[in-house]
Image (cartoon, rainbow, N blue to C red):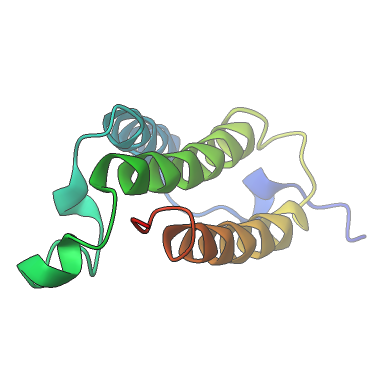
Length: 114
């Protein structure tokens, strides 16, 4: 460990992190309510026949859950950037990839109509 914190490697004003965290939280809430399918890349541009194969409300909730996890991690990084080690940025990146993979897997299994 280098002894550096997230604040040491951060560049830019802190208000940007708070704004992005709030935006992610708002988007996750919108998706968790089953709204906002227009935010889901690929689904919003899919033809009507393709969209009919998915449960739109469930797809929104699965995507919203993924965004909520990322929002919580981002909030953790934002609030405790002075205490968290710089290596936590790598943990966040790995978590983001895992969450994205989980959302893709769930979207293509549990969100499809039977």
